[in-house]
Length: 583
Image (cartoon, rainbow, N blue to C red; front, side, top):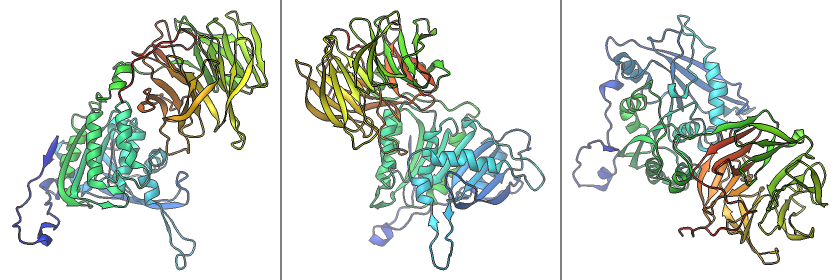
């Protein structure tokens, strides 16, 4: 909900007066109060980071008097050190019982000291650590700083024990510190569920401007957010802070997040944030220990596919690297554990059995209209076929394939990548009579492959870019009208989307296994939905199960499954013309 603080009316006499920074007087919650127990501040230097090597920084710990050193405490983490008169506010609000007893951890940004400070400048890590997308800063806080905090004790010998539950943790900051806080919670909602966000740098310095779009495409996460910004915030080379923060608010509303915000007329500073901090921190901790819950998104495709409350389950685990998901006409799912050279079958009752003890380290696989399982062998350059009894035959040689798909007419398409980017990747056609034809080349590591629901188009994932190519399939099986078509999101930790296995459903939507998880696209080539797996990995995807409405995703050493509203449209069955997308 939008709340505006009243401001003093200023006579319209001079533009300089109109542009003056408004005053933001502090409330009593931000001032020391007689009789309120005072917490202790402990400072130390931290210089042992592996995430940000060579950096040193100051860390300040706030420990309230009410903390007994026996039970894990709630945690508030703040970037840029101590802000908001936070120790005083915590003293007052803890004493009132408005917020739980919590330990504050105030972290300065890192600096790599110059070897000779008289002749060289230090390297300032603030923008690197704070402004970029990705998990590094969250890892730094969770794996390095908080464990270091727990090695300290108070002046009277109380041990510092921090809760490991995300529901017991808040994180906040101002400007770049605010975007660092938001990204840490976004990347690790299991570790932080409450975010205080002041004049947030949600702009194009290191990619944070993409977040409002991503928020709309992901399933809502269990986060509670408080925002503050003012009309006179920065408007410089990286973007317009005021507009960007309003865009963030609109995205949070669209995606169903629990959030509150307060807009004003201030500039790029912490004055207004300091004034509202007591109310903001009350909002973030309201109802605790009741957990923060994920909301309901207005994303139509997300709601059309996924069932509320139906999350991921482990269908199988214990392998090394799973790949090549495929489902037969009955909905049984087959996948490979490549390093072990085995193929497994997931029956309709969920039981997993070994189907082939030696699958030649098979990678991609697909079923054909004849009921046979077709696969590419990585141990040798061959395409194999296998009957339901597990008898393997060689279909084609001299193709070191990666993935494949077969159409209802028996045409089999195979991708053949090369780890050397100077060697062009290829797409092969193998016809029912055993003929082999090169139908395209030049792609950067062609990987996953799928046909459109009506089998008029062929889709090829280019793993070393952020594209999925589209071709029109000609009557003789050759390909025409090649086009970079599906635009995929790329994580900040990589230079490509890492697109791998793909699947289409009966509505014509394309599911692509990527570094970010499943990216689900409409027929017009646009990503509408992004859904990660629990372990953050995905290499292939198929719709299987008794009603062919369960997503199965191969994900490293596991296979995950999730029942959905979508239905499979296997390319080995008769073509199905879906409804046209909205353009």
